[in-house]
Length: 409
Image 1 (cartoon, helix red, strand yellow):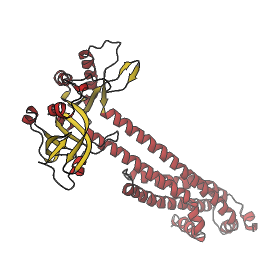
Image 2 (cartoon, one colour; image 1 turned 180 degrees about the vertical axis):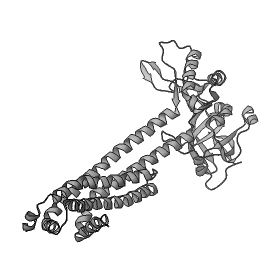
Image 3 (cartoon, rainbow, N blue to C red; image 1 turned 30 degrees about the vertical axis):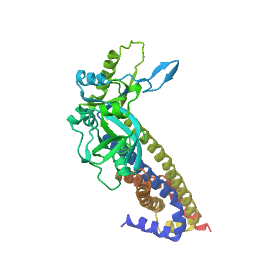
Image 4 (cartoon, helix red, strand yellow; image 1 turned 45 degrees about the horizontal axis):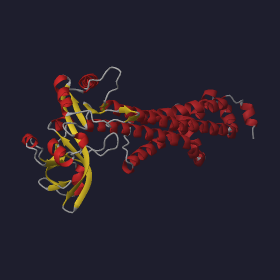
C-alpha cells in the first residue's frame, strides 16, 4: 500500500495539467522512437547483407584479369591475362577448391518476336552452375552433351524472362542474340541484386563455344582467354587460404618476378560484404547515438518542469509535512512523478518506434527488423532518465522547511 500511494499521487498530480505533461514527455517519446527505428533499420541492413552473401556465395572467389601499368595505370580487367588453362590449374592443383569455372562476358540485344531487351551475355562451361549454385525456376539446364556439341541453347535470368515473355514460360521458345537463334532451355532461379547494385537476374547464359564463336567473338578474347574465373572452395573456412594459394599459383603460371605486380585480381565476396555490413552497423550506431541525444534533452525537460512544479506546489509540500509527511515521502512523491512522466513517454515512444519501423518496411526499399532487445533497453533507459533527472527536483522538494513553505504564497 505504501508503494501504491506515491504512484497514485503522482498520476493525480500529472492529470492536473495534462497538456504540460504531454509536452514534457516529447523528448523522451522522440528519443525512444528514433532509437527503435534506427536499430531496426540497422538490423535490416545486416539481414540484407546476409541475404546477398547467400545469393552470391560465401564460399565463392572471383578471379579477374588484373591491372597493368604502361605510363598510365589501367584498372582491373584492362589486360586479358586469364585463360581456361588457369582455371583448370586452379581446380587441379589447389586442394581447397571444389570447382573453378571460367567464363566470358559481353552485352547484346536479345530479340523475341516483337520484344527486345539489352542484357549481359555470359559464356560458360558446365562447372559454372556448380560454382554459383544456380538452380532453375522452370525448364531444364544445359546438358553436358550440349556443351560438347556447341549447341545453341540458352538459360535466361528472371529479369530477361519477365521483359521478353511477360506472364509466360519461355522454355522451348527461340530468341535471337546478335541475330543468332538460340533455344531457351529454362529460366534461372532469381538471385536479386549484387553488392554493387547489379541485377544478377538480368543476363542470359550460353555455352562457352558458341558464345566465343557466334556472339562475343572479340579479338581481345581470342583463343582461350576469359573475362574471369568463378572459384568455389570446399568450405567458407578455406576461403582465405585458397585465395592465397590461387595468388601464388597464378603468379607462378604467369611468370611474374617478385618485383612485379599481379596481373590478376581476386575478389573475396565475404570480406567485401562484411565490410559493407560493418559500415551499416557503424552508421546505425551513430544514428542511434544521435537519437539518444533526444533522451537526454527529454530528461532535462523533465527536470526543468519538475523544478517548476516544486516551486508552484511549495505550499502543498508545507501542508503535507505539517500533517506528518516525512522528507522521504516527499522525495518519493516527486521522484515517482518524474519516473512516471519518463515511462509514459517511453511507452508512447515504443509504439511510435514500432509503427515507424513497420512503415519503413512497407514504404521504403530497405527492410527494418524490430529488435525486442532494443525495445527493452529503450524502455529501461527512459525509466533511468526519469530517476536521474528527477532526483534533484525531488530532493529539493524534500528539503524544504515546512514553516517557510507554509508562508509561501
